[in-house]
View 1 (tube, rainbow, N blue to C red):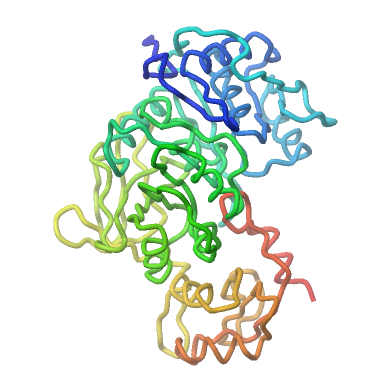
View 2: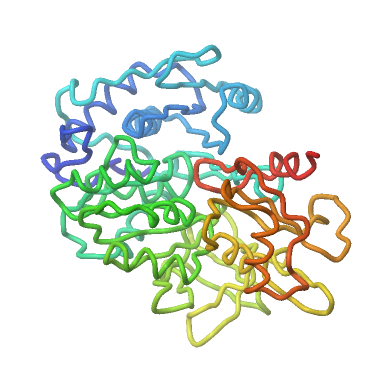
Amino acid sequence: MTAIPIVERDGEEIFARLGTRSLSIAEFCADVSATAEVLPQARFVINLCQDRYQFTVSFFAALTRGQTTLLPSRREIQFARELSTHYSGCSVISDADADGIDARINISPGANGTRSSPTCAGEHHAAVAFTSGSTGEPQAHIKSWRMLDTWRKVHRRYLPGAPEQLRGLVATVPSWHMYGLEWAMMLPTVAPLILHCGADFYPQDVIAAVTAFPQPCVLVSTPLHLRALGKQTQPAGNLSAVLSATAPLDDVLTEQIEQRFGTQLFEIYGCSEVGSLASRYPSRDKAWTFFDCFKVRYDKGSITVEHPELAAPVTLADRFKRLDGDHYELEGRNSDIDKIAGKRESLANLNGILLNLDGVEDGIIYDPSTFGLPHHGRLAALVVAPELTSNTLRAALARQIDAAFLPRPIRIVDKLPRDSTSKLKRAELARLIAAP
């Protein structure tokens, strides 16, 4: 069994920033070791810590203790307890006092001295990631520590910017999602990045966090968060790179963010079964390039990827068009293409148009038949637009899309049921659609 360090950086380098305080790699490793000693005896752990530093320390503490962290997309304690019944010997931990948890995590950052990096066997099952459930029931996927270690080193090679430059890292995505785990938690363990561990969800939080760093910053975010951030007028410090994933970027948003912050957007494609798989700079290349660690097989629009760390080849749910060499155009899932009156249109394209309308805060155009409702040859929409009406929205959409795909009805709602990575929760969305 091969032991792999949890951190592969010099102990004196800075790992995290909490307020005005900086914590070194050696202090982080000491916090991990101290926390490992107080975790409950368990084979599996469900980590509900909301604070980014508390979550990160607890994740690596469970790892070094030989425990496996379950990473459900739903964070409610009741759901965690239900999930724990399917995993024998499972503890629920949190950094908040609440009924239903087995242990409260209360780490005093940097109070445990310093130490070298703990290790973990590469074969150990470090985590179980679950699909978001946006297209059905969540599915579980095991991640070995060797896999996570391999992936973080690949991602370091692809991270935009000078590879040895010390930079801040601010993320609007949580570490319990695969995108956040890979790019906002694992990456600082091998790359010279300082993890911001304060508030970083709302646009004003992001701007304050980036501005507070004396170093250039990397922002790890999503299209929905970036759309809100692009509407801000305050300066946002020095952003050396902006990463986006979880939903397709459209040209309007890409141009807006790049002009607003003077940097290029780096887009990542991935799935829960594997993790991050491919990338592109959307303003200069519409094609995706898969990371060079994967063997890619293409067959009539379908892509299957292979890697020694994957238990079996994985066929992706999306369809692609092969361009020249190793470049691929993402066409979307079959369910994303709607056919009406002999015409074809992508729902992703329609939603990009909707979300870029002035006054629209959020929204979705959907095919009612996918939710078991009558289609009647029409699409429908739910829109968060407090200052607009259905009629004004329909008129604005009619200027940009074919009449066959104009949604009818358009219903104004207070909010859409998105999770912490901006993905829509299918079950809750179905209830909202069915509501009178």
